Image (cartoon, rainbow, N blue to C red; front, side):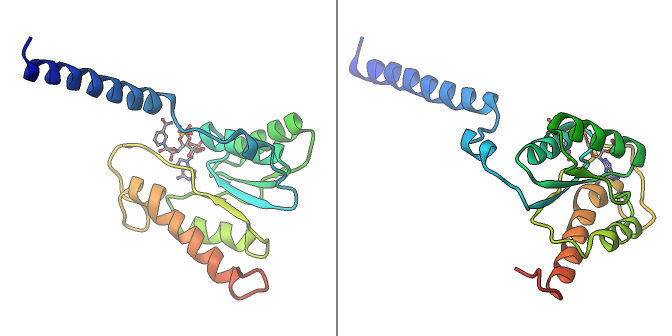
Length: 172
Ligand SMILES: NC(=O)c1ccc[n+]([C@@H]2O[C@H](COP(=O)([O-])OP(=O)(O)OC[C@H]3O[C@@H](n4cnc5c(N)ncnc54)[C@H](OP(=O)(O)O)[C@@H]3O)[C@@H](O)[C@H]2O)c1
């Protein structure tokens, strides 16, 4: 075997190892430092959009486990209250709460929701809720529904909360 062939063979093996390492990391998903999951969040308040289901629900439960008050921001009051009951039951606390429905496909709903939480000091805003490739539709505000739900409304929640916080002693 010539030198060039040997170098090529070694390069291929090294690239395969390198690729395998990153593919394994990617497939394993995001890593969380276990220490973070034991850190006390007592006295903190979080809003989790879409906190009634999926990743949002798991996130909300973890925050409550660590002692944070968690506002479940959901468009469906019944499902939000079920999530609140489930989290409070599992964490043996009253840390999860439902304040007001939040439908991210409507700016009016966003403003109504923020109005109800604007006097709270919000430490964490988890912009989790989202839809993926729904049938094409326009919202009442004239935007494509996925764009408004996943992006525009979350910006609006943040902007209005920030504007309110910065006109109060809660500004940071
Ligand atoms: N799971 C994945 O592999 C993956 C990958 C990439 C990105 N993501 C993103 O991660 C986020 C959570 O994913 P997931 O798997 O937990 O999704 P999921 O189980 O489908 O949950 C989505 C959540 O968003 C809420 N939601 C949808 N439209 C809403 C609206 N107009 N107003 C308020 N809430 C609304 C849902 O509420 P309802 O129960 O009322 O429908 C639900 O609570 C999503 O934004 C998703 O796009 C997920």
